[in-house]
Length: 351
Ligand SMILES: NC(=O)c1ccc[n+]([C@@H]2O[C@H](COP(=O)([O-])OP(=O)(O)OC[C@H]3O[C@@H](n4cnc5c(N)ncnc54)[C@H](O)[C@@H]3O)[C@@H](O)[C@H]2O)c1
Image 1 (cartoon, rainbow, N blue to C red):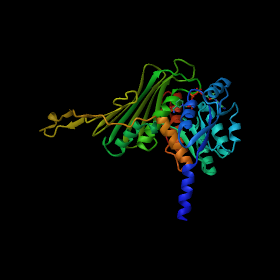
Image 2 (image 1 turned 45 degrees about the vertical axis):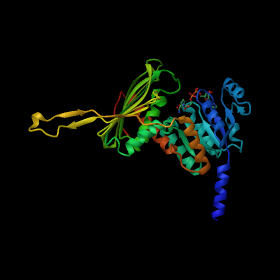
Image 3 (image 1 turned 60 degrees about the horizontal axis):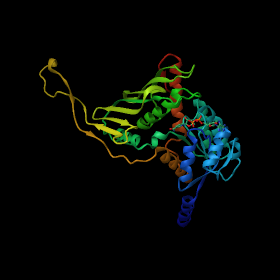
Image 4 (image 1 turned 60 degrees about the vertical axis):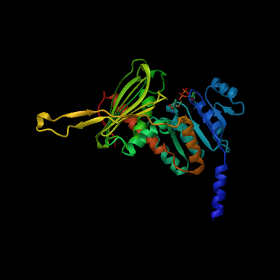
């Protein structure tokens, strides 16, 4: 029995996972590049509605089969896993078709644009015993993993608040607004850091460039233990910023994704009560200066880490870090933020 188990493990280890990629626009080719170079995966199919995109893929990867109809890939029993990098509104139908065709799925974020749809996909994956992972890339970013360590191991102390800024001039999408496009990253990061849904969300935003599609939004969230969070996302900003600041009662930290030299800066700064005072008139809160630590981070491409994790989950049949449930909960928060946005920032409770 033991020997059989060892042999089975060796077979799993040796197996190469055949991957089909649906959607070869801006982002899909990154998946093709990575899955083509990982040791235990190979890309066999690429599909896109656009013949231009397929021509581009065929020029770079002549060995791939290509089609404008993704259902051609689903008919190929040699394909084990599908990566979906199409626009968000198409995810639900495509993921459903893939799972029903007995394929494991890595779907780009956001999983869907409605929480009922996401939950249905989670149930379907469960019933079919298929892997459903959502491409929340920042969970595989070593800087964000360091923030998670600091929150989890108490380095920061009690977290008071967190805020993120994810702004740039473009790229401007015309399928979803900035909340579904950019804030899906920040909401996934907050979800990863705190391991829980927020209690309530409120969002304000404006459509300056395209009617009905907000290009800037400010989202405020309250997490359990009175942790405040805010995400500022925009396609209409003079400078590219990818930053998160977390303030705790022991330490504070800034993550700056665009600063490879010191992506993380941990500040031993805080505010202390003056220990000796005679009466209330003398009571003081003293800002305390301290060291700034810049931890060494392993340089690695987050998308490669994510795709590698997907292949490991496919081979070992284990639940991904950003599984369907995680992706569905992110959609739940995005949907609440969207509702608040449409109602001029009203507070929306998360169930
Ligand atoms: N994780 C990240 O950091 C990250 C970064 C960029 C984009 N994304 C996500 O990737 C997805 C795609 O984004 P993009 O920027 O590449 O968009 P895009 O518009 O550039 O590309 C989407 C492609 O999908 C194709 N497509 C649409 N419907 C299809 C169908 N039914 N069958 C086959 N092809 C179809 C389109 O023709 C297009 O070429 C989105 O969900 C986006 O949120 C994630």
